[in-house]
Length: 364
Image (cartoon, rainbow, N blue to C red; front, side):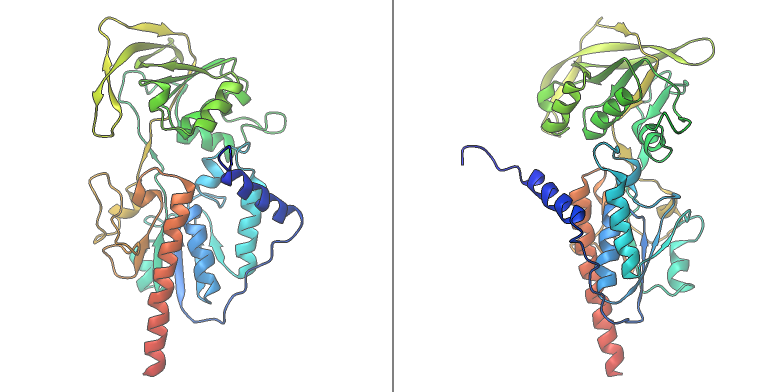
């Protein structure tokens, strides 16, 4: 083989073919066990747990904070990369299997996690709420109108249909010149979305070089093909606004690379007296997300690491009895595939635990 095999594209072809030809069937569900599993969050990890636990005959309920199901698949990934009808069909399959859904339900606020177990009778809980708390740079001007976190920007575009300008009132005001701060896949998604929403110029501002960018090479190439401009070895110093508080410029500073830091990438070092102004009216901050503390703060007894992520063992079990976790709430901001893998591992552990419990009850 002269070239590498594009496994991801082959998998996409097979999945699309299966869906278009109607070959997808509802998985068989075993007889009811009488056991109840609560899945908190309907992102990739949660959907996998729901499917795998339901197959074993357990009653499964998914609790979702938003009004639409899908988690980051729905609000964090643009329609042009992951069409909503794919998510809808996956959820329809779960519904046909008998999975129950409760939207606009914030575990930790609407209902505490311990109440799901002690009052509502759930025998196991999986936490898959993701990492949806945006991280900002802490620079002057981040409070101006026209500054968005990538999370907010993509949520407005996806859940509120800002991309459907001809048929929906867009909740994002029109931007002419957009700066996206960051170099990951989310930064690429934000930049490409801004272009689709009508921006004339979109700049990706990144303080290292293209070699160090964490975004997939394919995503970077797509952005370039769509006319996104990359400003490497540069970063924002402050954001300036007009008298009415709207973004009208961004002061940037240049960098050069020094020795590698803890991440293995060369450390960016600011070049003295290298400040310059960039003419923009919108700034999207895409430098990462942290874990929302709402659920963990209302759940005493669940252990966290120094970044606020839930700690788990090799089976995704938390420090609390019968409570498991996976996806970005454990990993930090990661990929859909990694989240799904953690969901599969957690579901296997939950099913094993409940099967052993059923066997003990049968012998009594």
